Length: 332
Ligand code: ASP
Ligand code: CP
Image 1 (tube, protein in one colour):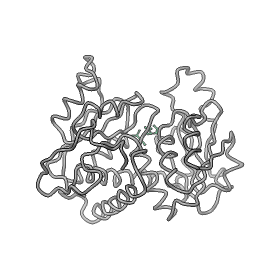
Image 2 (tube, helix red, strand yellow):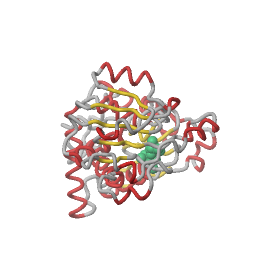
Image 3 (tube, protein in one colour):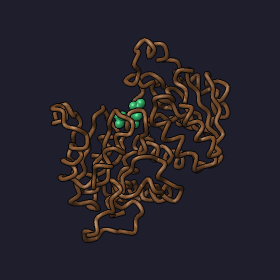
Image 4 (cartoon, protein in one colour):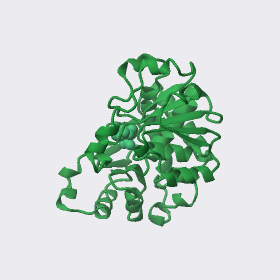
């Protein structure tokens, strides 16, 4: 991992290592804030451990790798998958969780700041998973923390653990990542999953297509930074021209909660809907992904198509998060 992954809050990690923990991991004690902190070696490590986690879950269900460890889930925004897969991950590893899913019932409602909330919760737990509506909030939290902070989505910024499970899914489904054409569809302006995924894909030799209404285009600063990395990118308004060449179709929800003007949201919602008829023009060996939740972008009739990978993708989230927790807490 590069400098961004230096110890949480820029501090060196604990000098005292609890019995049985491994210190050789590059992840030990580190916050997970942005995909920019990972290189290909890191991804290979995470994916290898995630496969081991999947095998162990299939074989024994739960095991005591992180017995005694306590994770805090601190969510200022709604979540089903990220929140519950982190709960499942720590519990399947023998640890436990402090679950704050609705900050309205915490002292945040009394006006407590994010730094003070983090200082409090880290005194009870070994790592904090944070979802927050402000871009940069995970980095801010990490700068006030001595324990690892895991960014579970910072507004329209990033969702790094989602990008890890997305690339893991592409690798498992397609057998490779290099050489693929990946088409991202929907809300590319506010969609943090596409921001993280596109950045992380610069580590590979892929071609990216962006399909969106003009007002939901990929941020130009991001396009420029990917261009500097040498990733070929093309922008479209319609899916039809690029669907036949697409190996991975990554569909996203229009992020209603990020719009200042709801009339603008109404204009663009429902622009693209994937149906079995849409997929008639797609390759036989391709996959359809979606970070979920979907609110109409993929019709339910697509679910039985073997190319529909979004539920497998969602399940992979638990294995990848088990791997991350094991690596960050030093027991992989
Ligand atoms: N669940 C993903 C996120 O939190 C995608 C979405 O909500 O549309 O970013
Ligand atoms: N993919 C994702 O982050 O889902 P949730 O918003 O349900 O956590």
